[in-house]
Image (cartoon, rainbow, N blue to C red; front, top):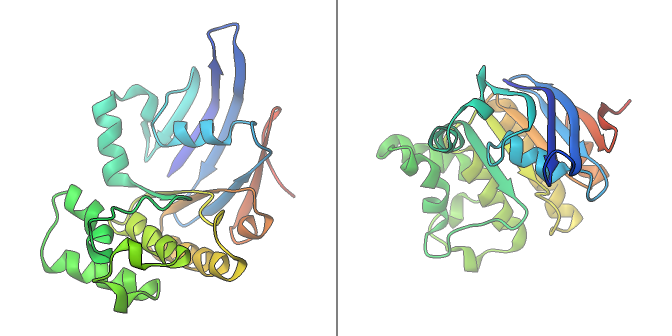
Length: 222
């Protein structure tokens, strides 16, 4: 599903600061992995490269066999919209939309409407325990509930790749555990490839395997 081959990124020109140096990673459909590491080692840079928001200086980054670095910006935007789902620490829910319409947004952006969309939204809201809050608005939700909506929205269009960036950073332990359980279950159910970037050992432990990013590169933790 996702393949990184010797991906490198330097900021400040050829003589600048090397942020990522020949990073390689493979994630298959149905696999859920964590990337951990100290602040400043390049986790955000790596996530931006995987999302197609930035391009590597060298190496190959393939999603479903397509090298994202070889696509133009319009093509990468289309890949993000149709094949990727994002869960952010800050939720990024649209305040003027109901919970149901927030979850439906990726489907609407991909031109889908009607009963199939309503059914998918209802299915996901039930999965995250918010079936009774479909008509509520983000301002009426707790932090834990908002993050559950964000997870449902990220998975609505059944993306091939789910990227979760510190999704439990602002949550208490009970809410964090609930979010992690829902995220893992839905990634497995949809046979998606999942990548969790986190500082939390508990969050990392919910994945299939853990990689540590350091200045020396990306290594699988024993």
